[in-house]
Amino acid sequence: MTTTAPVTSFTDHAEPAQPGRIRLVAAVLAAASVTLAALVVTHPWGERLDSSAEDVFTYGYVVDNHANAWPAMLADVIAFGLIAFCVAIGAVHLVRGRGRTAATVGAALVVLGGLLSAMGSFAFTTILYFVAELPEESGRALTDTANDDVKHLLGVEMAGFLLFTLGSLVLAFALFRSRAVPRLAVGLFVLLTIALFVGLPNAAMDAAQAGQVLVTGALAIPLLRSAAARG
Image 1 (cartoon, rainbow, N blue to C red):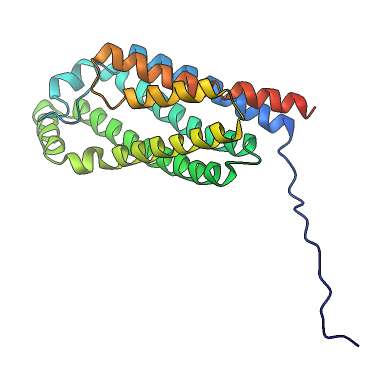
Image 2: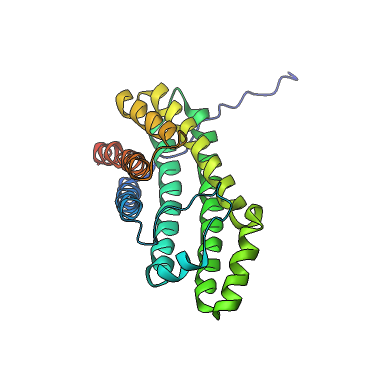
């Protein structure tokens, strides 16, 4: 008789994602990236706003862009949210060995940041919509109130964007370490991300942001290759 308990061998039975699901993630990522890049370049909601200015927006700005701002910003929010989820899923799928822990952490940050940024952006969009819908006196009063409280006006959106950016850089590190994508693409993504924080002029900022979005969307290519390899 022995008091030693038998050792049970544990096996990871987790199955890789099915090819059809990966193709869907890749297709959504590509479509959302192209959509967001087009919106960034054309900005149908009007000229780029400056969150550091004394007034983030003016009553005249809102009225002038009222017809296109709400639907365009809604499309922007949806595309950004979809990119966050798809990039997180895609990176975790591609990074199988070295860098797996970083990919998991980065994916969590990207999803959380994407959710917060999307919620904050939609709240901001809704405020702009009602500024233009209200009688002028009330609309101007709401504009002044919003500009006097930037923390609540843009705080959630900015926190989400920073979390998303941090998470995307962590994912870039994981992809670089695992060699799941060309390292040149990772380097280009990092450079474009840094460019967003160096105070570029409006046109250059649009180009850098659109480029970063498209490079992000290019993750669809290795995802499609992975799906094809799995049948």
